[in-house]
Length: 491
Image 1 (cartoon, rainbow, N blue to C red):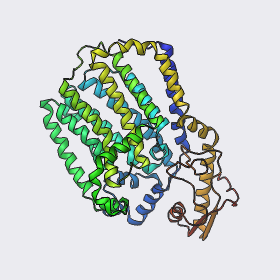
Image 2: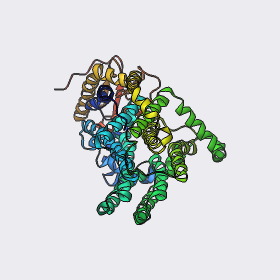
Image 3: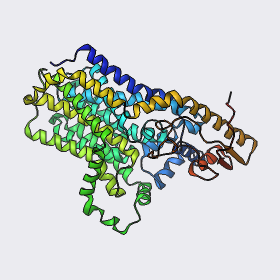
Image 4: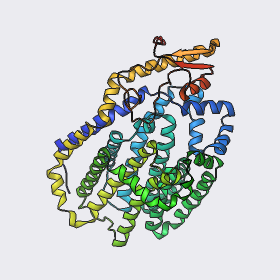
């Protein structure tokens, strides 16, 4: 058993809490954005149930997330502040889901030792590494529709894995209950987002290979439910319309499969060589190794055979490459920036799990345990250094300097738009956002050129966000001018 001294663990845990705190606290200043408003006025135009059919026919087969973006969208009901609560709840739910998945994996199928405390801290480390290195944290953490489209399906996949493991290797009296409960998260994973759908395929294949023979009926239940749900999602006319709209206007697009493999590998390599991503994956691997060595003396741990190792490594490779394959096939380009968020989080989770497995399963590596024990303090210091050069300091800076101003200015903007609608004012002229800094919660072009979305109004009277504000607040013309005076603060 390898344990870190208490001071080192305290330093590590303090670093994690300081890294996670600003991202969670920023949710208290969150505001709705673009598709949050669009889904709201579409629901108003077509009706809560009619909009489900309309979106299925014209844009997407993601019927679970479409339902959440409309029926459970607080913006649909005029509760614009509801996106703050949703972002905070999803942040905590993501943390809990990672811990649930890791603990189930280590305790059931592998019969290792993993307390809830250990699982929660390991999940916190993974989530902190993700928040610090995410390509575009805004579209994963704070944008309501982005969080619904990417976080909720991944939460579904993680909890499906945990429940499926308990259905296969957990206590016999609760196995069928776990199998039945797993069907709900499986629906979210398979139909909630195409990226999570393809990530679920190697997971299902691995379960099919490793599950005990007695659990086969449960596996067939998941395949049946998954097959029906996937078919309903994939055959949606809106999916094909969206795929056509996203495809490049190039006659060679039809022959993209000829170079699909090399292009996929190229995108994967470009992703992995980014310093923040590679260092974060290395930290996740070290954490997984440490946890594995820490429990290296546990009795009854299931040992993998050589053939099973090949299956694990193949599944690991497919799981982390299939997202790049999907986007190279659909758009002949790298994954969308907002999709790279989910790809990174899945990588961090799987790398940590593989690190634990390697340390636990390969006795020849046991000599590394004392090494990690001796230099654990250095790892904690380096981890704190990593958190000092990513999004963590940006989030703290934004929280301390801009978040409250952003919230106040957006509340004033919404109040002005409501007032204009109530009196029939034809044109509303609004000032741009004036904050000292913005990137994580408030991505603005004036502070960064490599952001995915600029959340402010477009200068002038044209622009996508201007149009969205016009339709949602039912104001004929919304303009943005730098010379406009600040809006009065609503009481």
